[in-house]
Length: 209
Image (cartoon, rainbow, N blue to C red; front, side):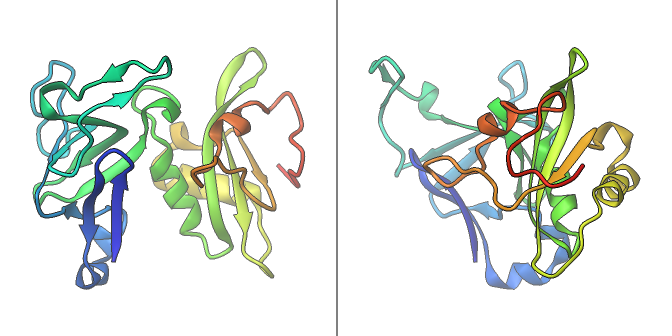
């Protein structure tokens, strides 16, 4: 079983064991768990259409009543809905697909997760992270991948794979191999650390471009 949740709302969705037999669902995090409501409002606060992309909101009896912001002020979820900080879409059957974190989204209409999923579909890639880096006075798309032991990685071939399947706009300008992804205390890829390096600066531990 695959599940998705937040510290503030616990488990939100689940992809059941039997649903893993359907390849088209493997990129999703499943459907709402019992007692959970999901919503993806558009820019005007109205419910987005089916497969419309927006910020994922959730409502559950398990969610926190309030939380503290960075200045220790109480923040109460608006209208009972908790903003998860994720960007995603809901399909017609209620399956949730996460596309990015709000703070990690590279550019309007461009999302990290589909590119990362494409890279990790390659049999030589175990993990991947996509982020923006400075290069020649602009911000460009970059990626790092962790290779599978005993398999050879070709960064140019991986870039071509993304370009061929998703389009040129989604192709990382830079792609490096790395032994291990930097992680946040919560275990997520530390994209802030990755963004602190870039095309104009070599990153410690990177092997090839």
